[in-house]
Length: 411
Length: 140
Image 1 (cartoon, one colour):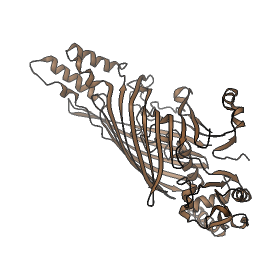
Image 2 (cartoon, one colour):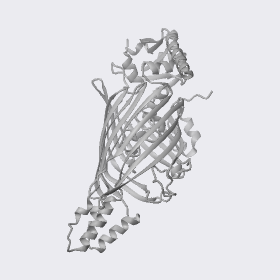
Image 3 (cartoon, helix red, strand yellow):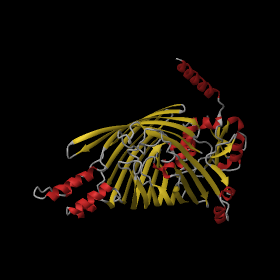
């Protein structure tokens, strides 16, 4: 029988076997190397295909045929350099990125004390309750956490953080503070989900604080982040058209109020998780706001409840968005004698609407722990989306059903 | 109705196995200076919430191999987690660099041996395996 020890601790000789170059550069001491891994194989489909003009893309799914396109494999290596110093890399390969290998975590960690550490390098930004282990599906109930809340495109940070744990009476506490920035890309899905537009995203002077308070069966978390955020939306034709039209009308200087260019951005999160023998629950609230840009202010929540029967967990989640539209048309005073001002207001109103819609999602899912270390998951999301048109004062309701499944494991 | 019978049988069997299961002892090295620990102290050590004994000395928990009935009973009764929950809990810490799970050292005798030679170690074994080389701090 092969024993599944987690994580496997191997003597340094394993490193030598892994690769000559690695061993060559570091074989002068006898540290320990730990490795552990995780995997998720899955896919899904929507009931209303986008191709047939019926539905809309949701969470990367848009075909009514099953797509086995959600595969992820991760390997984490940690090497102890000394008592206080260690190096960790988490290498991930995903089907969504054509199995290109990326390092989502790669850092040097210095243990300041038993309870505190400072890390330098690439880290996961601690936006959400489940941010840190978003890729490790095995650690939570859903196939993937609710898309309404877990939607931010930039999930990593290159910088430094400080993490400490402690107690407060009967409560366990933790505090994480970080500073850094990130350059990455974001796939904008317009009307053609098969060919998303790749946009460059970056943050500068990003800093944040996350604190938790809890006991073994519950945990409360509060986080606040801020950054100077840039998302180059120029490759989106509609956006380019809006800006050039405004320029032609004599309102070219409004670009700085519309484009996302080094704009002050804040992110607030609070949430609660509960995990007992028979019940699990989680709830999260977020607010994301970018000043001087067309992006709506995101205000989003979900509540999840689950019941566990031995190895089977049945859960239900209600997620909702209450995003607030930016009233960009108010940047130009309406002047009936000046047609350009009215036209500009029309363009600004349409730009404010671009990414503004609200939706409610009901999710029902099952997690079956097939064996220790592997879980089979199945989930149905029912999305009700409302697209309001503030000009005509009408709203359009559309819905979509997404079925997803996965087998997820850690080893 | 059939499902009900199966469930009833499952409850009875799980109840019986709890009654029949052997006593488990949590052990430390006699020179650790620890005379006894509460269930909560032990749970906090095994869940990585503390890295020291209540007296401030460093603590290094070791556990039995996966699949051991002693390990499952310990995780269930002390940490309030099933084998899968325990694994999911630790995967959250492992993959975020926030902790390393207790080392798997093997069976009852392996745990006794590991604890007997290291004043910082803590382990759990079937109470019948306890000998004079280790000190019992909690029994259940």
